[in-house]
Length: 267
Ligand code: NAI
Ligand code: 15L
Image (cartoon, rainbow, N blue to C red):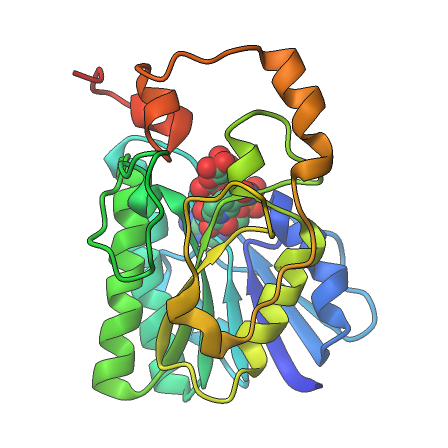
């Protein structure tokens, strides 16, 4: 599997920096972009500073790109005025540029916060009604709708990944269910890039954790097979954190601490 050119947005971010060397292995040229400064271009790399809200810059960025890994944008809760240009206008600019350039597929780094107001006592599938927990989650829900629209209207394919918690290792009780290892993220991206037909498919991005809130049966055709699990960390995390109060919103809901973030108090 060797693409001619892949584009990775958000390359200065936590996941972008982790993915840059990994994704380079799957393409002749890896173009990386961000608003912020990035490491200089290595062999087979192109580094482009491109704000998502700059329509002309995004059109240039999408030139001669086979597929996009869209990881750029605001990644935590912020006021709506901050989320809007990066995640809503920016996602539109990316899709519109991809359509005009004839890009075949986008892998969209969405978030579990699209469905953050489902309970930790529920297991949900990809087609549930979104219940965003933040303006951030709401903006990702817009991105998912945009992906569906660009597939239905223009045939531009997307695999939306509702990423759980992608970290080197799980660090708290919630992440025993939401953790996605770096290696499983790579496996998921390779599957998303190479599955023959995806239309617009939604897959929850989690490892093979013993406890889970997410049922990926509707995305089986994508072929993602997680191999890691949070289980080796369970005993230490439970011992350290002690019993939790299930009536507290950050324990009750899948979105965890995000459900109590932001300008409005949780009522
Ligand atoms: P991050 O915040 O470390 O990286 C995001 C990058 O996007 C930053 O380098 C930032 O400069 C760039 N960016 C922000 N606004 C921009 C704009 N207007 N134009 C161009 N670039 C802009 O976040 P992280 O953790 O690397 O996440 C990457 C993606 O994955 C994000 O879209 C995030 O929402 C999503 N995600 C990550 C999860 C995780 O566990 N790390 C969980 C769920 C979703
Ligand atoms: C996200 O969407 C965030 O980008 C990330 O920083 C984590 O907080 C993650 O969700 C999570 O829910 O753990």
